[in-house]
Amino acid sequence: MTLPKKSFAMVQTGTRALEPMELDIPDIDEDSAILQLEACGICGSDYEQYEGKLRTPVPVIPGHEPLGVIAKIGDRAAARWGVDLGDRVAVETMLSCRHCDPCLTGSYHLCDNRLIYSYVPLSEAPGLWGGYSQYMYLHPNSVLHKVDAGLDPSIAVMFNPLGAGFRWAVEMPNTQPGDTVVILGPGQRGLASVIACREVGAGTIIVTGLEADHDKFEVAKVFGADHCVDVENEDPVKRVKEITGGRGADVVVDVSAYATKPVADALSMVRAGGTVVLAGVKGFKAVDNFVSDLVVLKEINVRGAIGVTSTGYRSAIRLIESGRVPMGEMHTHDFELADADLAIRTLAREVEGDASIHSCLIPPH
Image (cartoon, rainbow, N blue to C red; front, side, top):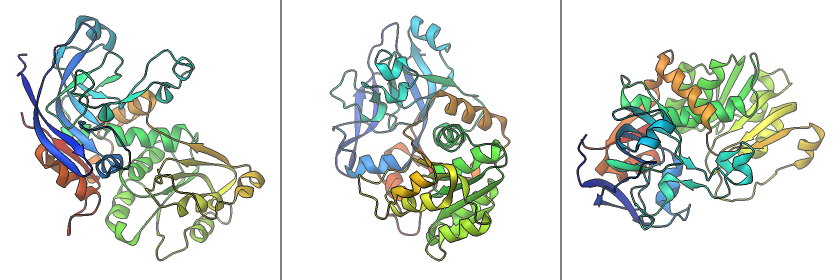
């Protein structure tokens, strides 16, 4: 495969500023590769980066959910990853050092020296670090997963949110067949959590959201949610208690963005001895009415969740490849790469008359 000399990319140059650029495609060594992007998913953290809330260095190429085909690869990289030219791969977000204590004890996603693809600035050679691009550099410490080349890229790229659903809503709380699970927030990762919990046999799945989330509630029901609670018109804690006969849920997963009330509510929703997983970031705001005595007296297991690890990604890819779940129900928009600004604003409900659930950028070929 002959590569061009330049890659078109959308580069963040400041707060709410994305600029098109033509960037050099770098040479590689025996341990690295170049990916030709087919799609890059967009999620809430893309908006946080766009807004400047994550304080990532600029200029930088955003995009941490890349799917594409291997366009160039070193021999040692091919042997290590088990892939070759033309293979379609999903790329894990985080790059770990493989040598610090978290890495050596099995928590590579908590690496002391970790890098995140979309947060490495252009000034860090070789520059093509993010997924808002036609081509992307693959560092030797990348973790790749082969994906069926026959899938629609817009569906295959859901490996990232669905991987989060498996890790946050199933693996971390050890969700069991028959369990009652409450998912706070019906965005793409909330919907992915519904899919993952239904896949492992959860008994009752309850999803909460806002009045504006009606369309997402309908998708949640398609994916297997038993109850959807509009928190602006119903008391979610009271409703969960009604559904569970006063017992509470076995598992509560908060994937809501910015709102802090769901964190406090989760302590009242969960049963004694149950598990609360906190995966929605709140902009470092304090949580009002967080009653720690509930954690003590009910012996609640509270877990923080950041990122996805290989087991979650593998579960997600297997399920997507199986075709058993109509993943397309969650996908609402394909955007051209040059329209990255519009894609992010649509996700954030800043575009009047339009809103997305899952969307992705499709680069030119």
